[in-house]
Length: 450
Ligand code: SF4
Image (cartoon, rainbow, N blue to C red; front, top):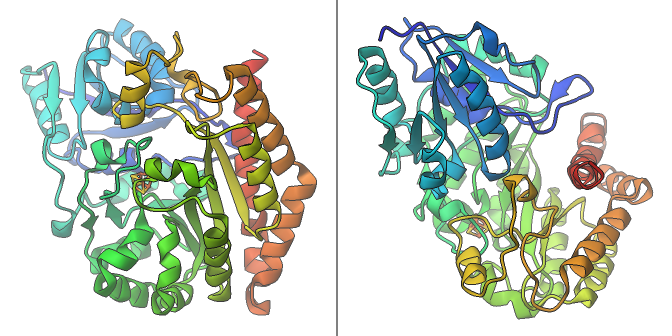
């Protein structure tokens, strides 16, 4: 079958905020860049447009990428596309974690990263030899280059006009093994690094001034690859950037020289996975933290002293958590000088150790939709609370954390920490993270009252 065009779809989640999307379809931009230049390719972001599905036909190949909470939406979209006679390929994290669940309704499933298999799928569709399952079993070696973003893709996505924060990836993978995390199965145990020159070229060609790193655990490279980090940060320092943010763990505070370089490289904030301030949860944190309050305070103070902000990421509902854990966490956060806070409920995603244990114990709640797997809903029976108690305690915590007065207080303190010459540029970013998390929490209420 001769191919007419390729369409890549990001299912709806957040809508627009003040006219722009919140989640740039960065992975789809890479996959679109692997489509041969003679084949037309389009990216459809359902947060930005009504999907023009009626214009699709039998010669069109449609890829939909979905994480777990979006897989039901992906299924609904796929059904409408199949009615048009077009072929649907489903990829993304959920397919990678539970491929057999998707095989019943997608025309093709693409398991794994897809950088090798996606070009093969396009070729096979064009020749009429399409298979029903493609498995990309090897982790792409990023040191020999990733799919270069094509200019036609950048023009079409028009990221500066359509999205609040461009995404960028510099490293991928995480050697930790936190029991609740899917990173090991989705991105691999081994940390992979992109060449510094390639990263710089991408930033310059995309004319990025700000970006969020999608890397699973960028900060761990401070320990694993200090020379690479030094080279990278010195290169970023030479660029005219306004600021960028990344995910990290507490041990970044042990590397003062790299913290200084990171500040010179325009790093604005670390999103640090403290995860828990209950030391009894230590076993579940994969060696990256001990759940100790005083250690967390030292980390925040040290990072602040180097001129970098800290957003704290916390998970609630571990087996050792009780109702008192919520009050202790609130007290810690209120007095911690964190610049922003993310509070989530433990979510037993497919493929995690956590889910396997809960399944074995018969504690996973029956569910008819994966939309509840959004980290704002309780999807299992907690050990020391009822489902209702955990839900109510989480609600109460979030209402306190994301009360406008608390957001203002954290944002104001964060803004005042910047040097005078950066105050103007950093005003919006000082408040935007908490506003984003407040919006994320509001998904729960929208669903609960639906
Ligand atoms: S350190 Fe972060 S990315 Fe790595 S396994 Fe733990 S939660 Fe996942």
